[in-house]
Amino acid sequence: MDARFLGIAELTETPPVAVVVDVMRAFTVAAWAFGQGAEKVVLAESLAGALELKAGRPDWVALKDGPPAPGFDAVNSPAMLRSVDLGGRTVVQKTTAGTVGALAVKDASLVLCASFVVAEATARLLRTGGRGGVTFVVTGEDGRAEEDLACAQYIAGRAGRAETDAAGFLRRARGSRAAAELMEGVRAGAHPDDVALCLELDRFPFAMVAALEDSLMVLRPCAVPAPAAGATGAVT
Image (cartoon, rainbow, N blue to C red; front, top):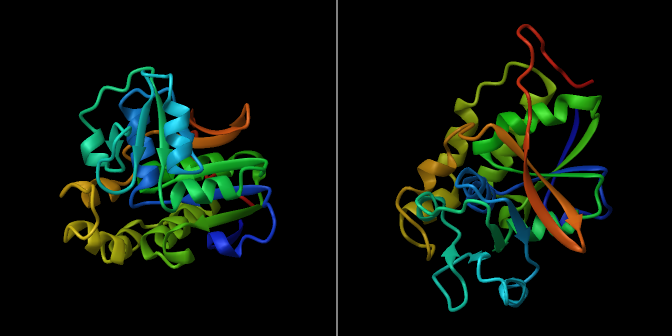
């Protein structure tokens, strides 16, 4: 598979296929939202935009990076979200990097949002249809976030060949600056379990596909069947 790894600012044109990676924590949180029963996640362009989307929709759940804030129901923490019943509800998400990256490639033919918790399903979806060129958008730290790059490279490896050992990639993510800041309490709105949950490989069996719906960028889970026994599914 022909894979490119770019930061958001390095996107000079819309790629045909984009995988937007935010491990700590936007797209781990989005996966947990679906795991808790959410129907969809609307990716907001701004904090004000998130509150505007929620206005008049009391059943929608708005979440953001950082500490709790008026009008928002939750923060961008998988550990804090794991006990929330989101059955059938819509989540509005605004984060510093992940949602920005997804909106930057909103016109791509296929946009996947990914983290370690949905890595295998994402790789399987990339293997279907013989997709040859994929741009991985490394959202954190202007494209240099080690946890996002490690996850992107792992997914690319899994999409291109059957055998890719996750241990080294997870080790890189665990040693990243983002992981250290979360564990040390530098980032507001964090829980001590966030890093462990962000590094839980393949927790969920679905990929996450983002697409424009009535001018909104909407993220939905996508079930990806496991390959038949003995099939490699390699992309060429």
